Length: 470
Ligand SMILES: Nc1ncnc2c1ncn2[C@@H]1O[C@H](COP(=O)(O)OP(=O)(O)OP(=O)(O)O)[C@@H](O)[C@H]1O
Ligand SMILES: [Mg+2]
Image 1 (tube, helix red, strand yellow):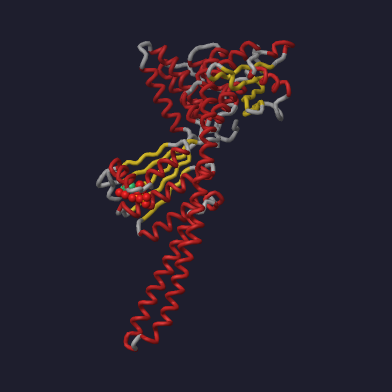
Image 2 (image 1 turned 135 degrees about the vertical axis):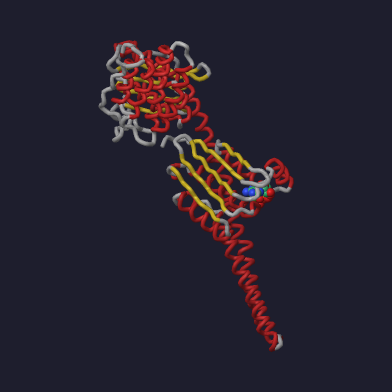
């Protein structure tokens, strides 16, 4: 885990003795100290929830105990997911819990661990990031010196995470994982090995295995930690499998949809664009041919009309080429997303006269290529609707790349519409803008929602899950 500046590394927990109802607040100060501005709001929200826990108990001492240990575990998860937690922090947090809850240190560590690995915030993270936090806590608490997570694959066995070891996990560790996945546990007890392992079950079957090398605790204690970790890893591993399934389905579907679009772009280029060029040549020829027959006094007028026709054809050619170009996928994947969106939005503004703003937070280039295409095409389609239907004076496109998801919002200040009715009517007329957008997003495992009403404004929002840790 990170040891970047701003972590709590090396700091001793403060003395938390004091008035009972101040323990939670002092624990909060302990965590706040040294954390970056980014995590402060999350820690503040965690404190608020902990106060609710505390105030829910008649006995203030019991309430404060529970709230303090709950707070510490939630704060550990917040810091870890912001990459601001290191091993010294974990030990410091355990010592702080021991003091706040008047528990022996070993018990405080176990409490902190079980509550942290089971914290529901972990399920918002990309699964591998969550699993990494869960496993790294055992290293931070010195329960294990090395730990790895294994999964069964079609061809055998795959190590999906390995922490604390030097280089790849050893053959013994691999053998241990294999044995667990075959339903045999604690093989390594024979021969006094320092390895301990547990299965992560799914529908009662070992689906993944965690193998750890015992650190500075008794092997049985390490085993207890591993068993807790395996329970907490169940839903995380399950989610990982679901997302992986979505990701591969997404890339297949996006791939075929994009191939169709690209085909359309080529057809446009080979058909209508060539026709327009031929038409423009015909117009020039016609001009030459009819000129001798036009009376002197009408020549200038005829000239003007031909010029007008020619420039409309030039414009039509340009529009068709732009359209063909926008159907091309290559640039969406190969250029930075921010850059192509800025270009798209500038062109939109120029051509429609509607003021358009793009706000990007986080790194949009951390999206998978399928997700980038989904984001780009949805924004294209949403802007087309704003131009065609909204009578808006301004539109804002907001992209927020968060650690758990990517959010896109397109808001216009136009006339709005009745969503249900418009969708039903559009379907009847074979209009597929909104329906297509929703479908694209659904294919990518995300959510899509439109808020609008006659009189406006219109707000379109989509969220795509992250498959991979940042
Ligand atoms: N931003 C918007 N402001 C006002 N009305 C909108 C907006 N977006 C969509 N609509 C309404 O919803 C209807 C359906 O939109 P949709 O994109 O599905 O179809 P379309 O734009 O009519 O046709 P297509 O997108 O297939 O060219 C539109 O006809 C319009 O009445
Ligand atoms: Mg449309």
